[in-house]
Image 1 (tube, rainbow over the protein chains, first blue to last red):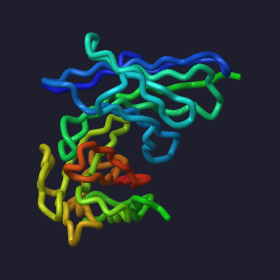
Image 2 (tube, rainbow over the protein chains, first blue to last red):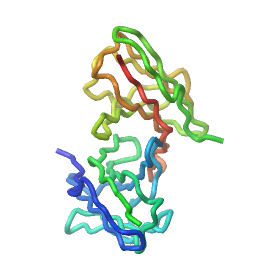
Image 3 (cartoon, rainbow over the protein chains, first blue to last red):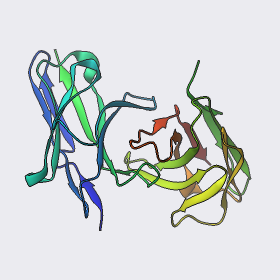
Image 4 (cartoon, helix red, strand yellow):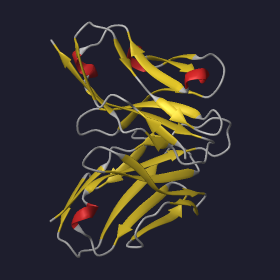
Amino acid sequence: AQSVTQPDIHITVSEGASLELRCNYSYGATPYLFWYVQSPGQGLQLLLKYFSGDTLVQGIKGFEAEFKRSQSSFNLRKPSVHWSDAAEYFCAAGKTSYDKVIFGPGTSLSVIP
Amino acid sequence: DTAVSQTPKYLVTQMGNDKSIKCEQNLGHDTMYWYKQDSKKFLKIMFSYNNKELIINETVPNRFSPKSPDKAHLNLHINSLELGDSAVYFCASSSWGRGEDTQYFGPGTRLTVL
């Protein structure tokens, strides 16, 4: 069955520290991959996406993600976290432009000063 | 200029009532979706429509009935509301068949059933 997993339910980092959020997917073929962020009480905002090509994808707010086919992973990274990055992060995957997007369970990020 | 908008943002109602949530997108997309986010923040698709045609219909009680009057609108009507329907409902939209797909989400409607 298709699935997206995010092994870390909650992560706490210090402001200025680097961040890596993990995401693994299980699909028959390489799906489209996304990272969304949800700030408290807000909707989902797309951070970045991968469809094909360069496996290192740059997104908004200084985030990047690396697609690794051999590991079925699409981990999100940021070199220096800001307090405003505290939010819920969702990894998602879909097969085609009209297929449903399957979301991972989310990783809650806390940032301490 | 909100890309995907939902109304209302908050909805508090009694069990057994019927309510609707409206969604509109001004992105020119032809596919729209409804997702439910439960109290544990788990997001699950409920429905999707392409050009007003139902494409995806996950295992959702038939008390939930989506209606798409045109490509820019997808409303969600819920009959006989139950406590378990309390959640945040997100509308999203995307383009079909352009070679890449991004779903853009609305701000969500927080439904509380008392």
